[in-house]
Length: 258
Image (tube, rainbow, N blue to C red; front, side, top):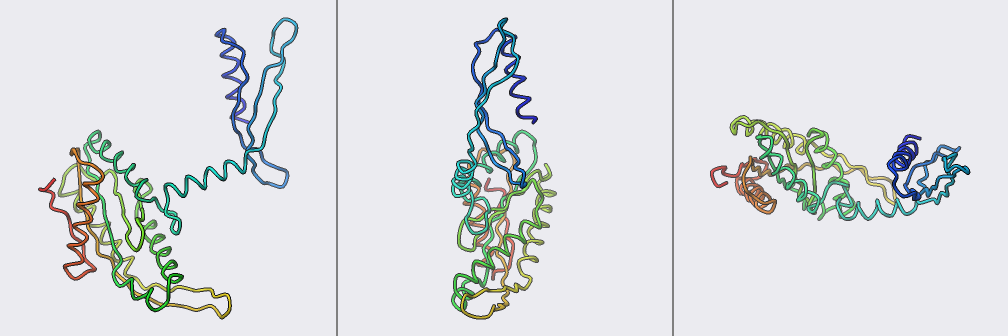
C-alpha cells in the first residue's frame, strides 16, 4: 500500500542519515475479504542480518476502527449541526477567519448571507417538530445544490442558515451583482413548494405540503480589518431589514459602514 511504502521509505532515509533506529507507528486502512474497510494502527521495527543490513520488517497491527469512528463522531458534534450535517457557528467562524485572510491576500470580495425562513413557525404549530426537521433537511439540500464547492452552507439552529460565498470579483459593483444573483437563486429555490413525506410508527405515511420564503441579509468584505463577529452582526442586521420590508426580500448591509 502507498502509505506503508511511504513510511518504510522514510525509515530507510532516516537510516541513511544515521538517525537512531526507532520503530515507526502509523494508521492505515485494510480491506477485508468481504469488502469492509477497517482501520489499523501498525507498529513496525526493522529486522537486520548479522551485518546490520535491513532484511525485513516486523510489525504488529491493532484494529482502531471503533476509535476512528468515535473521533469522527466527536468532530461531527463539535463542528456540524446534527440534523442537517451543515457547519455550525464554530466552524463558520473559523472559515470566516480564513476568508478574511484570503480576501486580503487575493484582493477579491467575499460575501456572507444570513437567511431566515419565513412562514416556518406555523408548520411546527400544526404538524410538530418531525415535519419541521424534514423541511429543514430539504432546505439544506436545496442550498447545497445552488452554491459552488468553494462556498460554504451552514446552519446556526432553528430556521436560520448562512452561506459564505468565496472569490467574488475585486470590483465591488460586480461582486455585489454576483452575490445578488446567488441570493435570488436561493430565494427562488426556498420559495418552491415543499412536499414532505412523514413516516409514522402507528399509522399510514402522511404527505405534508408547505410553502415558505426566505428573508436574506448580505454583507460583502474585502481586505478589511474586521472580525467574524462583525460580519455575522452586519449580515444579521441586513436580514432583519429584509424581514421588516415585508419578508421574502434581500437586503445588503451598507458597505460604507465597513
